[in-house]
Figure (cartoon, rainbow, N blue to C red):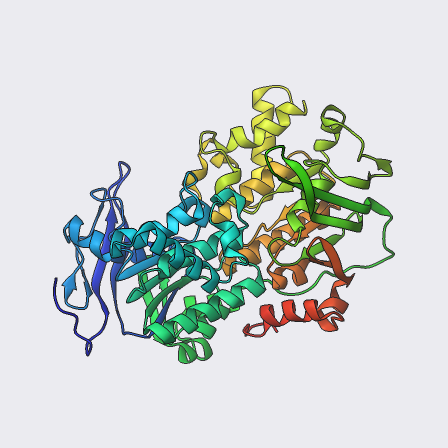
Length: 542
């Protein structure tokens, strides 16, 4: 292995190109990309989905699907070591030790069959030859370092038993286990709520200073760029169109694409006129308690109070935003209202109690009560065409008869969310993240519902796409007088859509009130902390 040169750049990328071989014609995903990264420095690469950011990062790790992916031109050097075309044995010795990567989707990146201890310990045993006992001690240290409470109780947990924020922290613990020279962070805070996001960013900055680690930070969040990066490179269509010191690029952008990115974010607040309509949906003292069982006989020794006495009043044409950290009970609240999980307390829809209805009795109401999930990758079946996905609900509820008629309804639903109706024969993998989320919304509105639970529908999307989805949701609400329960950790999106805001912590309501009052004059310290974490480092529209 070549000796490390402490005086030169840690990472040098020169004239990098990436081409994917495809039956319909080759795709040039990256073209002529060049940059350097020094020890202890952070370079942010920003751009919309499909711009080539992640492909560039995966090229550095040599993790692209070779030989389907090729490098027509280019060089990637770690110190003096050439990585393009490097032998597998060399890359195995580098990955996880000198270069580590935090992936965007921890649920996909973590092995569902291995517990937390085994997954984090593996990189220590593989690269440092630690014993299991020594690795276990280091795993506990790492989990504590990334802020997982009571890490000893989490060692035997599997990824599905962790919240999104906890899964991402486990990913970061794995990436930092061997104190790498270079950390590639590919959208590492996308799915995290604002306070945890702030903690993770502070953690990365602290570790960078302590370890002298370089960070290649892939993100679409320009607020994070200003906070984290020394330099920034803006990518679109596989090319870097602008690069320089962060403050210079952010304060004085030269390229039209950079200006568009800086201007594209959810703005404004709901504009309402007239009196408040009567409630469409109400809950009274709603509770969801999960039993904690211990011992051989699995006796109940306590409860996790995921939702603990929540009251909601939601009128047609209005939006209640629900905010709070991971584990606060937001998603559980939405599932309970939809009667997808058991709960105690009154739930009324359109003046009728529904909390005692069984599965069959709820079916007629499913058409009127819809949900849009956080992850458009996971919520759309990869085996069904877009038309089949939207058609499924129409068939279940017997809304249309002949196939030709169904195709017309599906095309109309797609066109309502800004997609071409002719796209219904394509499959989810053929669409971008923003387009997939539009398909998920089309699936919901095709049934002409009155109430929709929106569970983090914009968290995985680019800023510009977020703004488009917010505008789409506003337009659909105005057109069909829809009631939204909007669950999100992105307070800027919540502010743009919500009439009322409910702030949750540990299953309880900490603060509630009109959105303008909550955002302009919060009363509780917890709400103030959430707002400070969300807006302190933002720069546009504040």
